[in-house]
Length: 226
Image (cartoon, rainbow, N blue to C red; front, side):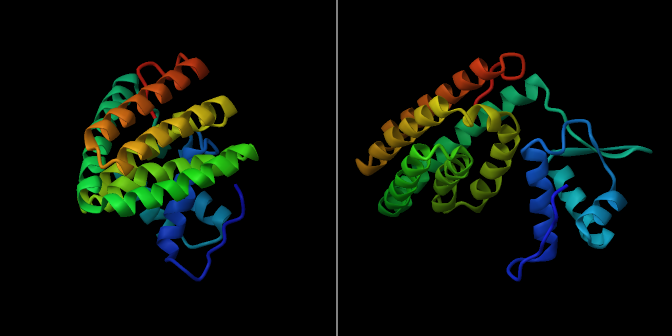
């Protein structure tokens, strides 16, 4: 495991949670792998308390699960769960987009335009890891500007689950380019203050992401969107 460092900003508990979540999402800690509190604390170089709290939070996020007499293991997502998350995410992101347009259309358009310009630069450099981060920021902007704390809480959690499967497919240049074009269609509809067109563009974008996943790994990605 990479060396863990804590900067001045942010709390230790949040740093540990983010650190372990990222390891799960990027596949460094794989499905069914055990998470041992004492081992993690020793590897990170901290006490067991923040690790224990991080594990409890990851269990609530359903990224790991507790097994009696075993401890925690990284959860393996079932096909039915994937389908459910896909449908829920489409509904939630569509609602967030409508509310964000109604509440903060100009600010949303300005923020997403800056984001898309950064996407173009990173794709030209074929820096797909940076693109993946910008992709996440693009989708989370609507939830943040929707005015709903509930949406802001739910949307990222659903995305975290899907990232476990999407990270590899989005690290292909053709898929990243198509994803960016989807973002541009959404942005254009937002700039026209057309929530119906924006939601339709979002649904098309998610459908295309599903197709990219299917082409990348058809066994894991059946009915999957990201």
